[in-house]
Length: 275
Image (cartoon, rainbow, N blue to C red; front, side):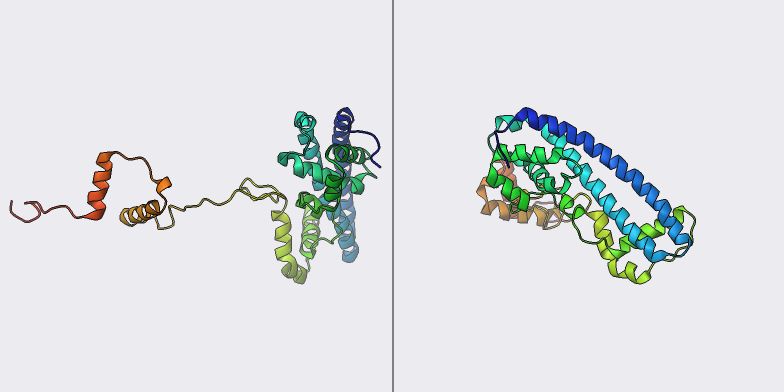
């Protein structure tokens, strides 16, 4: 299956060809979806709602596929941009692991439409080893992009999403249509998750398959910022427990803090009313 040795030039050429093929397929599927919307509108006009729902499910799957292809195109671009890193390193860099594993995972699912995907996967397996390739194909390492897995899955789309597509198509073609309220109520949460999971990164610097940075060991604002005195006392207590976190201070500032926190100021004539 993987005869021969790794060839960087072959990988580079097929990455470029795959990008062009992905762009063409995205354009083709988008144009087909626009034509299918007109057909669905015709079904709604003659009250064939169930037939329209079946066609909408097909459109949603095509939209899912276009989204997955956009991610794959981005990953091919990433590998080309960091091709020098691929050539120089024996092991897969953590910053490329998700892209590499996703391209290997998706190859058998897209090779009928994009033959270059299989060639890319073969070269990546030759580069990083058969064990790495097997983990990527089964996603046992958990590094494959979750969005691509979901978009290329076989599960049916949420019913609320189907009703939303039908409602949007009916409005754009000025057709009277009443969506199924039970479907909207039952699947409203799952449909909202569809919109929220387009980019499943959490914004904290982590990536799917890799842990995020640990939280900071000390939360200085947990005691509230309204009262300066309470904040200072709690902070000093924390600094006493963690000597390495103490800031460098001058002798004058240490004396000032020792007076304000440890003992009261001596009485003055003004405070005793002797003026």
